[in-house]
Length: 279
Image 1 (cartoon, helix red, strand yellow):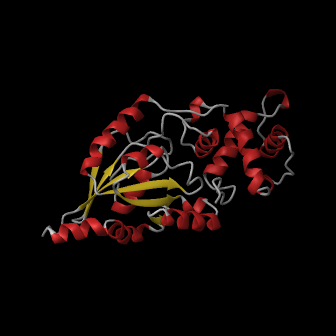
Image 2 (tube, rainbow, N blue to C red):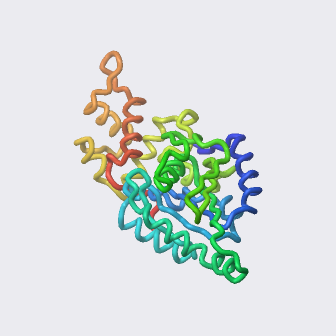
Image 3 (tube, one colour):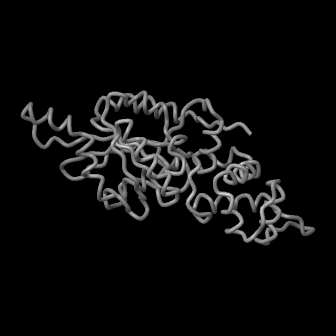
């Protein structure tokens, strides 16, 4: 299966971000902690190459903690101020203010030397679809400041959110990039739900997930479904269908329903803490 999804509104959004970048002091980039490399949009690096950067490893509670720490150190070594957060539970949110000041230290010092005091930092919040930008903004603002949803593409227009006197946030739509040079990146994005499920073959996606997760987390499927997984992913899926009672007429396994259960269990963390991009 070839992975690609770049609808027209993303092209428009990238153009708008390029224009808005002139107004920005800081780029706050949310990555999915389960795929920190695959969820990093190279278009953002291009647009924000001269801006202060704050990288947030969101959904860190769903990712392997050892890998979280290794990726944290990696991005810090690249010159980015970096934090692990969980926007839903607000874990790490209290550390954002200090991280913003650290990332914008040079800008604040320049303002001070020019006699400019208390000018708010203007930050753009960026990330791929379904990475949790709106949930992050609402957690940080302490109110429902941005629309949220559990499917990619909820945020469509430009939204400025004032965060007191010191910070203004510009929310942006989730965007991918026109072509994945490595199809593994596209596959990982599909696994976490950043590519619209409606354009994917969900059974093929689930089979590929079984093969992928077995490499580094060989026991998670066995523990979750109380089965002994087979080398053949189709046979493993048949076992899960049996355990979960997913049947069609004639007592045949309902593989499509079973595959959706598997992917939902991974995306919600029910399979355990899993990082697919490993350092």
